[in-house]
Amino acid sequence: MTAHEIVASQPSRPVHTTLLALVTRLEQVADDESAVVEAVQSLTRSGRVVLTGNFRGCSLD
Image 1 (cartoon, rainbow, N blue to C red):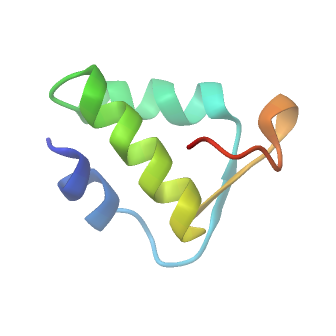
Image 2 (cartoon, one colour):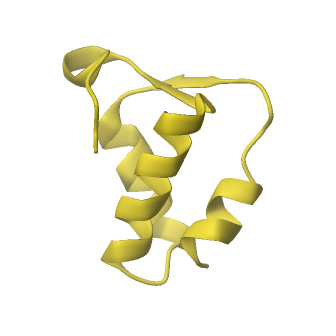
């Protein structure tokens, strides 16, 4: 799955999760590491994913 497909498949309301849980889940469906990175950045920038834990409020750009 590409980063674009991963982002498109996410629910419209924000998901609150840790960065580790998000990366772990994305690794299960992504084609490669770069797709995971792109998806994490896109999901957090768009507000579809809100990070909790140690990375709460961090910019991942």
